[in-house]
Image 1 (spheres, helix red, strand yellow):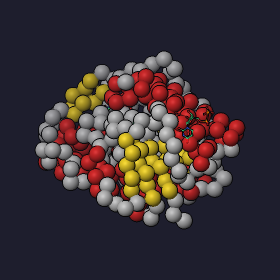
Image 2 (tube, protein in one colour; image 1 turned 60 degrees about the horizontal axis):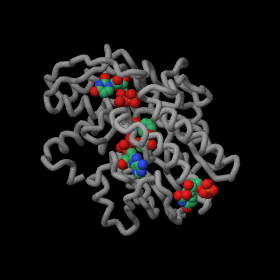
Image 3 (cartoon, helix red, strand yellow; image 1 turned 120 degrees about the horizontal axis):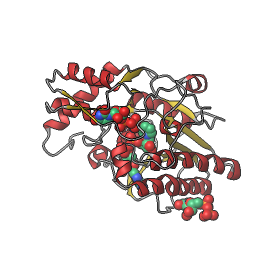
Image 4 (spheres, protein in one colour; image 1 turned 45 degrees about the vertical axis):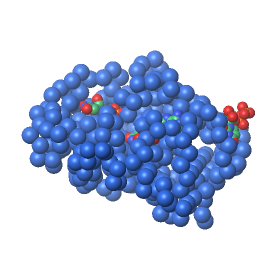
Length: 319
Ligand code: NAD
Ligand code: UDP
Ligand code: UDP
């Protein structure tokens, strides 16, 4: 069935891949974005598509639209960007999610919240399962994002219980791939761009902290399956359980790019989680989903993307 789908944050890294996937499946797609971290270049190929529509709008403000599904992704995801204007980040998560739930309620649309592994904070159990309540600092520099998303999850479940809105929650773990912003500040894009420019790779702390990196195509598959799942609100973890230290990631990027860049150490940011790794048993059971693209393959594709971007003086206009 052809759906009329709203993708908030549709000009962002994950949003651009999701919009393409939904257009390829024959749906009508409305992309709503305020371009805080979104890239016009990444959605330029869609602009001439007859089933694609772009709305420049801030989700903090109410909006009336007629849609059948809402993928609510709008929110800066990189610590550099979400901390640059922390109050705006809280407003985006809380007021933005409230507005999109109000919209879903009014039109009877199915609503999916893009939540995050950050709701687990600096976790005390490994790997993280959905029934772990987390270890989050409510007053630290990451709190605008972590607590904002926790309230967004709360609102989502309250609209479900109180107003019977058909909701879905996915908790996304670190995701990477083409269309990330070059100055995004996240570790994969930083290391690749630094290596390709022969600049030092900035490892924060001693590099022993771990993350598990999911390639964006795998993630989008999981998100779409969750939207289509029946009688399952989640939350469900989506991520790649292969865990690497940041130091290992730096070595991989250096060997794959053939870069002679040195590694330099910078202070570990406050509240930087020491370990993070998803337990994806639930996604396997309920969505029959697991990631298939190993880090080595995904890194090669992402390096190829950034090689092209960095070779273009005006940015990724051709993509
Ligand atoms: P991104 O920063 O590339 O994209 C976010 C998009 O939302 C951007 O296009 C931005 O302009 C838009 N946006 C921000 N505030 C807005 C507002 N107030 N109104 C309208 N648009 C707004 O980030 P991403 O990596 O694509 O992440 C997308 C979603 O997935 C986010 O909700 C994020 O929290 C979640 N997530 C991402 C990751 C990851 O590793 N990429 C991990 C966990 C969760
Ligand atoms: N809202 C919106 N678009 C809609 C319907 C609602 O942006 O189509 C907003 C509305 O302005 C409000 C929020 O969503 O700020 C929550 O709406 P709801 O109807 O649940 O609550 P109420 O308006 O009664 O406070
Ligand atoms: N990191 C790093 N160098 C960088 C950027 C990030 O060592 O240039 C580290 C960061 O301290 C964290 C990990 O890499 O431990 C992942 O950071 P990212 O910002 O990508 O995501 P998040 O911290 O939200 O998981």
